[in-house]
Image (cartoon, rainbow, N blue to C red; front, side):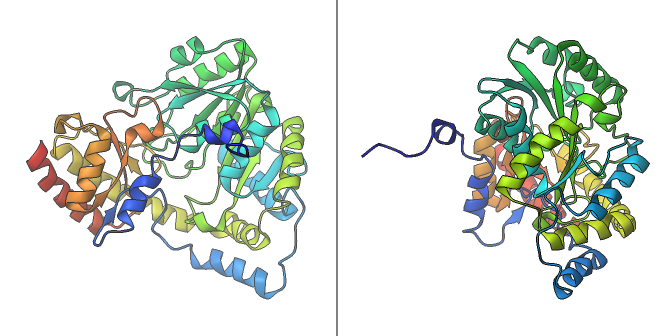
Length: 387
């Protein structure tokens, strides 16, 4: 019998650097988790009720493969109003099962075996895996603390080869909290134009920005035609479990993605689509309320970490702080392991997010203010022992 029935793309995938610490924490009592990248808020009541009404009224059947046309129209209006970028709801928008499915769709649709995708890192843990599962090659280009974790256009251009097919951006950034500047994104746009590249821009955290401008990549002049914009409802509306996202792309690319989508998931859950429509139409007050609370927590955790000598870049978006922990004398993996075992505080080593994450850890402040205060007290005890 053969050794394995699995293909090399699957057996060659690195295990998630996040899951290990969640698994350990699940066996322990009194753990404060700063590791989970998920809002601690409940989905706003009116949004939940929209999903419930869908079930009660029998709206539990398949929708169009691309999603409810009413939701696509609402999404088109939202993007036009927010970023002055226009998408045809009939053939340029697809409602997906979270942004994760959208990532799978775009790379499966556009990559030939061996095609390269340039990825500024640290980045979301799925990026490299989605490229590799589609037969591509992930080319990591590290961002640096001294540059506020902005992607480096010069390094990106230096990484371009004849096999480069796309650049994958994730800003506001998980895990650093960086928000790419307008000037930086324009320089990346020039690179995409110069080398005829596609840009996949994951903007799932676009609504979670603090005193800083988020620039929608496809709104940059000339970029609509070569951008696949990805977004969703999980973070801004506290809808992670509803599994609802979207892609916005030129017609040809959208048609290719839709062809894969219809053969894999058919359509996103109907009740989740109804809830998403309510979020777009009436969810703005909830977004503003949550952003204000995240900002309060952000200021607490950043000042607390810096006061302990853990140099922390002030995050401008998302809900993560990314402190440098080299002063502790430990590497990021040992730091995370010992902090969890000794003080019952869970966070994630920066190296789990790719090249450039070494010597850092990710702390999520998507948990209560009081838990962050207690986590900082425990961290202070830990640093007194090791730092």
